[in-house]
Length: 77
Figure 1 (cartoon, rainbow, N blue to C red):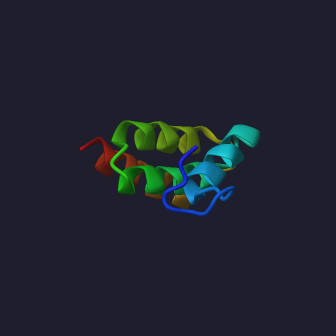
Figure 2 (figure 1 turned 90 degrees about the horizontal axis):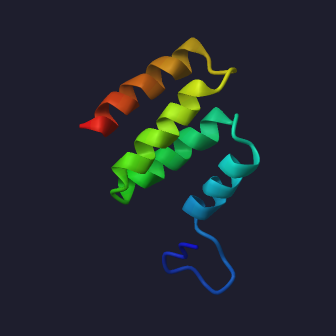
Figure 3 (figure 1 turned 90 degrees about the vertical axis):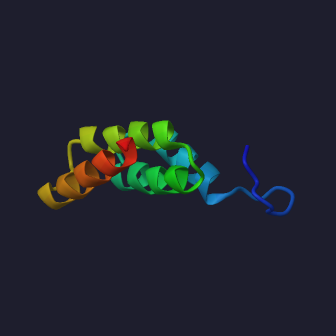
């Protein structure tokens, strides 16, 4: 578990989002937010995987699909 300077027993946003994505794999926004954090910490391959997971969710709107697609292109660079 990543604590990133948090006190004992506290989880980071990265950990919380990873749990949410595991419990609800069709929650596109959680995958997108996790991808953002992963990019910020330099885990680009994992960010790409999360953006792909977000795009595979059935309830993704055209606007979300466009945003995630653009972010995926940027993350791959």
